Image (cartoon, rainbow, N blue to C red):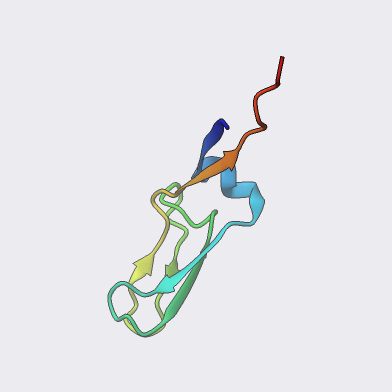
Amino acid sequence: MARIVDKVSLDRLRDRELRVSFLCPYCRSVRITLAATQTTDDWNGIDCPKCQAHILLDSVSLVVIKEGAPPARS
C-alpha cells in the first residue's frame, strides 16, 4: 500500500484557521494562542500578559501521511 506524504507550510495554512497553543516560553505560566496570521511578516504577534515577551510565529509546517488506495489487481 502506497503512502501519500504531504508537507503543509504556514503559507498554505493561513486561510484554514490554524491556531497554535502553548505555554509562554519565558515565564511558562501563561497559555498563549497564536493564529497563522501572527507571523514575522508584519511582527503581528501577542504579548504575554505576565512577562511581556512578544511572541509570534516564525514558521510552522505540518506533515500529513495518508494511506493510499491499494494497487489495482490485473
